[in-house]
Image (cartoon, rainbow, N blue to C red; front, side, top):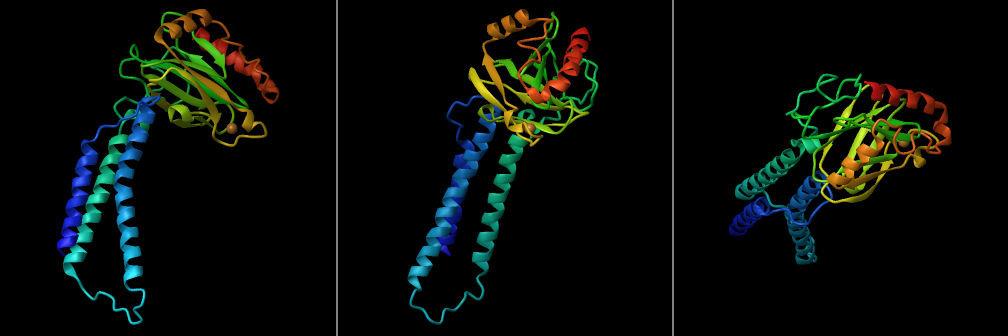
Length: 287
Ligand SMILES: [Cu+2]
């Protein structure tokens, strides 16, 4: 019994340590930091439990290896209470730690910002529901990411200038909150940027907003993570995280244009829809 109590004490101490411990390694985005941080916390708890359980198992097998008439423990109230309480504490910790991460706007999408359709969201002509607007639009970069067989159309909001449209290349500034309003023109797709820990479904007729803040400049691969047809595997893009100055320069250079390369991105299967894609850009620019 003494042993069980000691064990409970050790577990409680471990939780306290884990809660107090700060996440260490630098990550490429706030989202990644949150996800990896949670993963680490859960590992700190899971590894000792695994070692403990496996240790008891191996010990038992060895200790009673020659026992032909094993007798099960009939009743041990204290032991039962101990493992019930220990399990409850562990589950409570997992629940609380997960809630802390899932409850942030970066992972759960957030409830702090009101759901809005058009008004005050951005200058793009948002015609679908579901987009989450930043509380203060001046502080956040807003980009529409529109999936289409088999490319990505990127529409940047450009305060003080005309909107910037690009294909397959998403440029965002580092160390600033970015709202990516994900939608689809034709079919189910999904935005996936593993390097920044971003993933979101793209549905026609609605927006799903990714909120992120990239902390590490560089180039990250953008994939479509929802099988969408014959050229799904070619539906690749790039996310470039640049400095604030480079981002402003990018907007300035491409202001009001069809963006870098427009829709002529060599997606042969997407050609039939390219004309309408351009039309949309034009109306977005005009809006
Ligand atoms: Cu796809």
